[in-house]
Image 1: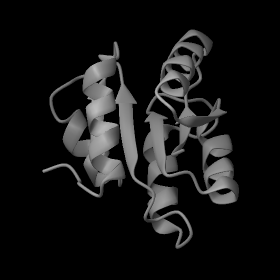
Image 2: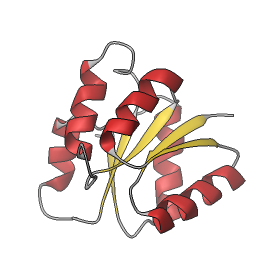
Image 3: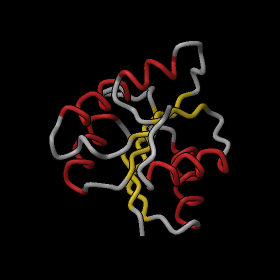
Image 4: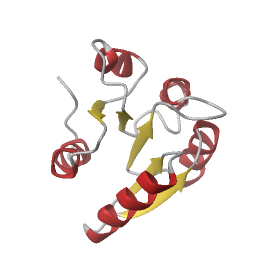
Length: 125
């Protein structure tokens, strides 16, 4: 059972995504801010991280940079999730260390496809 860390400060989004992922057979860990996400990723070593970019305490951009800079979490794929689907956001997420990018509102089948590809070892092109 793949372990996914969902870093999301919005409770409704966190609950909805967690339930849908669990129904698909994923074990889901949750964090409510970037700092908690970095700490939990280091402790639990999830197979994949879904990272909201607009987070309190430590934003998703910096959290992704820290995760990719640390030897223990560097290889964990990260999918950036953001409602700020502006030109250049995808490139900014990839530069921060994210392996893929998806915009909100979440299109679950599309997100699930990206999760499955990353778990198989493919990265964004």
